[in-house]
Amino acid sequence: MFLYDPAAHQWSQSFLDSKTPSHENPMIGSFQDGQGVLISEDTEDDKAILARGTWSGISKDAHHFQIDYSNDGGGTWHPAFIADLTRETRDRPIVATNMGEPGQHDFDFDLGKWKTHSSRLLHPLTGSTQWADMDGATVVKPSGAAGQPGRVQGRRLRRHSRTALTPLVQPRHA
Image 1: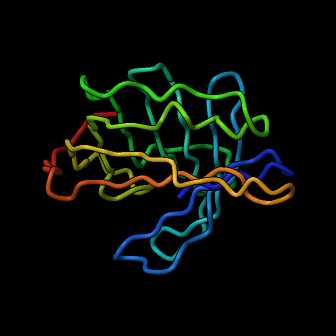
Image 2 (image 1 turned 90 degrees about the vertical axis):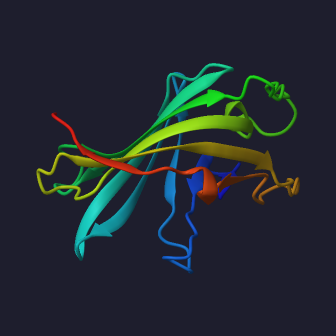
């Protein structure tokens, strides 16, 4: 779930799934120069790490999303998840509005129906080159807005189709 805080001019992204029924530390950040970067504290194999989500290559019909991990306080970053999204041909982009707080519409590009190719590194931060590739569909819809000054004013929900995912495990060369 994405939440926008107009007072801080920042977005937060929280993940909820059946593996983690409570929400984790959210990724927090903002958009600059056409790229969104959100960072959080996390753990991998019971060790403290930083996680960074980056949205780039943004156009009306495609974008790239990547999660990188750092186990040295952000000195170096290592890819852990990569996704390339292409808008479904029958889906028309939702036209962004200029209403609301500046920054509130940063993620409007992501609304709609997407073909998704994603890859997840099976053993991050270990030197592993074994990735699981998945092709599927993603639907991102707005979920309303609070609109009261000083309160969260933008929300986005992303739903993945588990039945459309077809994982393929394969080694990759860096």
